[in-house]
Image (cartoon, rainbow, N blue to C red; front, side):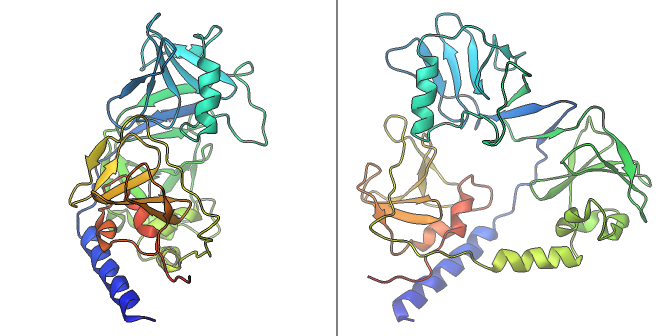
Length: 342
């Protein structure tokens, strides 16, 4: 190993420690329970609208889903499955749209082809249609988790414990019969409330009732033990997280064409000197005026401006690895360059 690469790796390791030293925000998200099929539409803060040239439509650019507003009628549209739902307000109620503004379908296909939006068409192996059944639409502008049950929650006991769990959901919802509190595991964190309606508060894994550690290894809920400190599953999860998944990248074949809605809208990354392009679905970071980095599909790219040209990066500034866990771009700190050849 060259001395330069060793020094670069040490700088990255120090930056990672700095980023992890920032306290993680454990503010409870809004937790929504739905007894039927539902879809969560997440907007990153208040909606930011941009007009679509040649139409009467505006689009929310700080959301992955396609959310449109027709200036002529004042109605809102969201693409889901094989069509659109419509409402008078973003909060709903949403119904299947039978008539669409001119150009809505064309815009949807164009933006999806560019990778700008997710049309939420559903699994590729299933042909789901709004004509058969329309899901409940939940629009959120703050951190929100959606837990869907097949009808009313079906509580069943966990053998060998004083815990109940909801059987008819893919979520992880429990009740401790000793303290009568409800517990949910979302985004790797535990939250507690008197009942499913809330209010929810964060609870450390080390502060869970003792019976959580007694969940049998052959239980349908064995998977949650990876989020319970002190269990064998939690120890295995830590080890697995340290093992990198690597790939060899061809500098010639790897391409990066970022999508930016208009001129780059730069916003600071808290607790760093970095800026990122807010109005892009891609991770684009400005380190300095002539140092730009983008991460896509586990590959780093670099350019002298946001417009490119972009090439495969051979090194990444250590400052990027100081991005704190509270940032929506924290995930790029897991993308590293381990070695390179000409």
